[in-house]
Length: 354
Image (cartoon, rainbow, N blue to C red; front, side, top):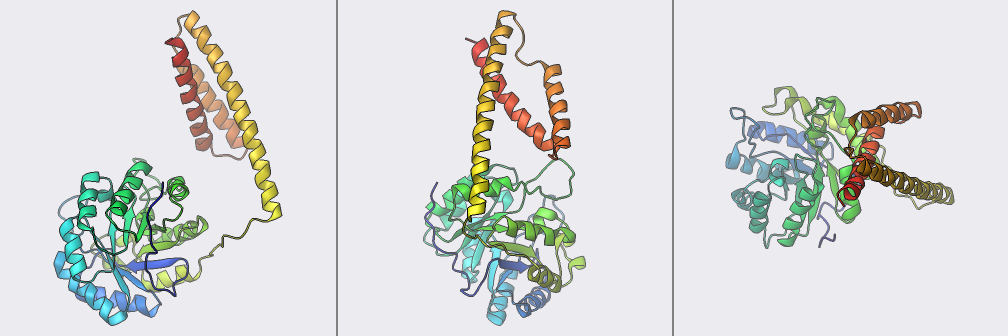
């Protein structure tokens, strides 16, 4: 799936990763300017701040709106940094461009709504400005791709994606579960698209920002979108996930950036082994499905239900335990066998319903 892209048009001296940093919300002019100057002194080239901040529940600080846009303009004039903010409505786009905002991003709650994304796309026609699209709150790659395509087909060629993790009902370590396989698949399908990691929203905690930044670099991400505040503990929104500019500089300075080196003979040999084992896996799966179809014939002849819950639970428990003994995550093994079982049921249903 191809996009019609141009480079993001970022400062030419930027090295990977490029970093867009600043507070979650533009609270006061003093807070914005203090944070911006501290970041600029650390070599930051791009400043971010939320101007429109609708919260999950009403009653919290929801941004200063148009009042804050002159503050970002002042940041640009005094520090030379590019400035970025989130837009959720066509009028946001119009006002942001009027005040010279250099980079726009579309939030996760907007990406999830194709109607809202299309309205933004229509408002961006004829505009040459970089637009970054966050993943939707749900782990839906097609919805994310759909939003990127809508913006691109409106004529926006300076386009990128932001990975901020996905909402989960499980209370786990992260605020939003990373699910790294989804941005990896996005990169496979759209290889020319820059991908930025948002460790602040992904982790939801300051202590998780550094390891998430490193993971993003290990995954080959192009940039980072990090929330940084001159006084994080006093922040009016998302205080727990913002870091001081000094701390951010420490984190970025210690990142290990891995190069995309050319494949060596040793690596090629290892990959060949993987290819051979994948072929063996496919052969085994084919044989397993053949036996599964024979079982379907038996069930049909004896008027048995397709799904036998006791047998299914036995397989999941036994293989999960085996996986753990072999150094694999039981959750991983469970997901593999759930997928195998789903395909087995599909094939059995075809036979029984003939």
